[in-house]
Amino acid sequence: MKKQLASLNIYSPGKTAEEIRTELNLESEMMKLSSNENVYGPSPAVEQTLQAAIQNIHEYPDAAGSDLKQALSKFYQVPAEAVLLGAGLDEVIQMLSRAILKPGDEIVTGEQTFVQYSHHAVIEDCTIVTAPLVDGKFDLEALADKVNDNTALVWLCNPNNPTGHYFSEEELTLFLNKVGNIPVVLDEAYAEYVTAEDYPHSMKLREQFDNIIILRTFSKAYGLASLRIGYAISSDEWTDLWHRVKLPFNVTTLSLKAAEAALADQAYLQRTVRQNATERARYYASDFKHHLLPSETNFVFIQTDDVARLNDYLLRRGIIARPVPGGIRLTIGTADQNDVIIEVLERYFKEEV
Ligand SMILES: Cc1ncc(COP(=O)(O)O)c(C=O)c1O
Image (cartoon, rainbow, N blue to C red; front, side, top):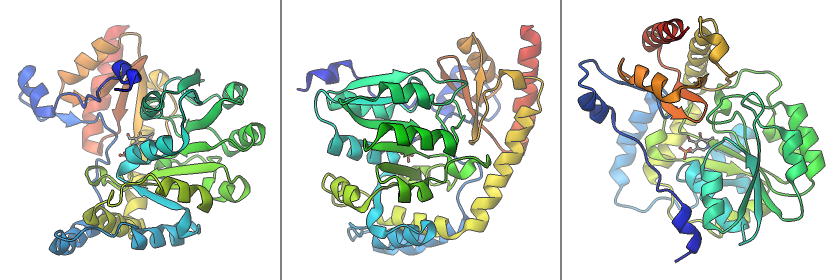
């Protein structure tokens, strides 16, 4: 066995809404806002497409995912050869780690970020080098200082999960100029939700910096989390390398078809993204706004010294959020959900004073 597996935790999805409801003896419906799913669901076009696609589930999927790659290629104006499809970004992160990392290599990333970067670095017997976040965003200056000859891969999460804050194109360009030709992953799982104007135009930057690997997913703004489909866009040469570790039929026919339908319905995507931004603004207009880190995503990070107490308070009022070190990560709900949640949080912080 790989000795390093002994130190790894098995991913724990937490209790289901029903389990929590029974345990706490609650009568009301629970609001599951712990996984940053799209509370509005996917485009209605997805359901129709799936009904048609189900006729062919006895056949293996298109291993190359050609139609979806063509659609992404057209959408982003990148070559189809630059696209790698995966069963969610989780699998993409695994493929990149598997292709690049050797025992003894170092990865560089933020201290509090998406755990799968470190998880796979441990499996590949690598060392994890981190720099603390500043106000919930990656400190690119500090991270550039950590890059050295042993660095095999840099993982940047923008906006960052679990904090929600982002770094700008200017900060990123400075960083990329400093670190040279090391592979730099930009995990942009929440990019569609960003409204900040100085957010990096990564697809354009890719023309200037051929060492960036851009990650996007259909799990968040496109509302397809259960279908497990995400993708990486990098140089054609590197994408060829990732394909060498890819399982032949890693993405199902239903996922490919659903993703194509969701991508084609940009009007729906823009509507839900706008709705999210409107609802997000309500949190920043609340009485507890000074407890929030800035967010460009579909979640907010509520800072608190007593995470367990706030989490319990929310659970008892039917709100399932994600407790993490230093705070609670809460997916922004629908308008009706937020009416309840904002009131609950205002009461909590008033009682706390
Ligand atoms: C920053 C980030 N990257 C990647 C993922 C994985 O997404 P998926 O595997 O659903 O595409 C998530 C999911 O929460 C995430 O927050």
